[in-house]
Length: 288
Image 1 (tube, rainbow, N blue to C red):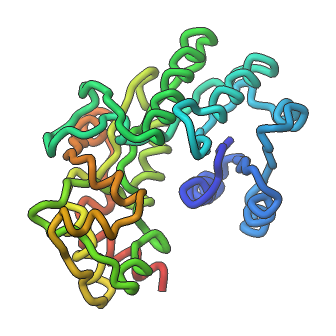
Image 2: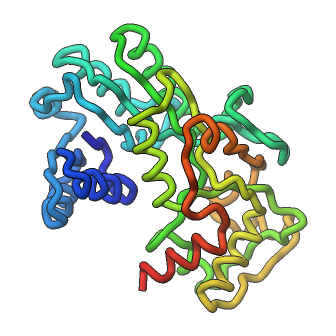
C-alpha cells in the first residue's frame, strides 16, 4: 500500500509491479485515482474527511509506504493522526515506511549532520513532519507494528527540476553567501524505500541524500549548465532576500550537510546517481 502515490509513489509502484508484487496506490482525489489507473496501477481514493471510506481499506498486516504530505499549515500532521486512528479500528500494518524530511534538523550552520543530530525544526512544515514521526513512534510502541523513518533531502529527477525558474530569470543569492542544501535523485529514493521495507531496522532512521551537498546557487548553476540555459542572476544576500518568495526565503534560512553513511553502510543502498552531474544527465534524458 502506497499512501500518497504521486511522483515518487508511482515510480515505486511500477517497480513492485515489475517484480510481480501486488501494490495499491492510495490518493486523495478522483483525478489522482484516474491517473494511477491509466498507468495500470490499482488505485484507491482516501479522502481523510470521510471515515467510512478510510475504514473500507484493508491495511491489516500490509506493508505500507506513507508518502502523503501533511496539511499546509499548523504544526501538527492531521493526516498521520487520522491514519493511526484508522489503524486502531481496522487493524495494523506489519511494517510502515515513513518518508519524512531533513528539515527536522533545522539550521545547523553548514555543519555535517547524521541521524544522531538533535531535532530543532524551524519552519512549520518541518514541525508537521516531526509531529508525524512522533505519532508513528507512539503507534509502533502501542501496536507492535514495525516502523522505518526516512529523512529525505530535496528530490530531483525527470520533470522535477527548476527549469521554469531558471527561464524566468529569477535571482539567486551569490554562492559564497548561499546555504548548503542536499539532494537525492528520485530513482535512488525509490531504491531506498524498497530497501527500507525489505531490511531496514525496526525503529531506525536513515538520512537519504547523495552525500554531495552544495550550495543552493551551485545546484541552480549545475541545472542550468546541464539544460543549456543561462545562469540566473546572483545578488548579495541582503538584496536577494527582498526578491525571493516566502518559500525560498525559508529554505535560505537553513544550512546543513547530510551524511549518508548509515544509508550506504547499514542499509546497504548503492546509489545509482552518487553525484549531481550523472543524476541531472539522466533526468534530462528521461524527460526528453
